[in-house]
Image (cartoon, rainbow, N blue to C red; front, top):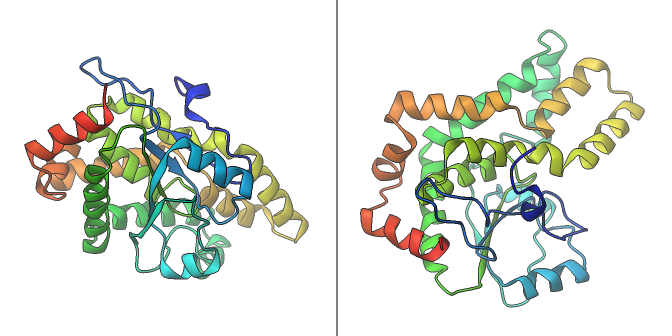
Length: 266
């Protein structure tokens, strides 16, 4: 269980994986501000009560990392006054799309690790593809624009764990949050979505899914420490470090990193 767990989970009832990044400490003793930075799953199921909650919470920007097919399937419901920004990391969803799942299921009858291996492939794309790099750089542009006190930026994908997890790794590193904290935040998905995943797998079993299929679906719906370790290994091998990635691939200048820390830290 991650540190500050009770601070990270916010009171959204009709969505899943809605979490504050406020409260985390940096290596130089500062703290990420509350009501500035939220990571979530999609906003398509939000009811009127939660939309008002997010409006009152100060949500100003919504950054949607999903593919067009995902957006069309379940469009976000936007809190009053918030600005929606479509910022797809993939041209199609590599982590949760029905076609991807169907292909992996076929492999899964011969390879019980097919789901796990597919997720590693998807994470490689999040780091190395030009489309993903462009999307994450645009994410930073919006982070830099969110300079009004008490105004929050939400960034999300479908489940709020993979594309969103890489986004969290990048911004938290830029703010100086220790890697150990970032890993704990990443793994918090398994706690925040435990009830959803349990229900999802129970329904799949009722619908006839065998053990191999259930294992693949679990690998798609949860996070493993090996996923984030794979991301870090890929970045370190190809770019030297996450900080190098921020400078050389995200093209963040020293002035921009200073501005991010002024906006998001206290």
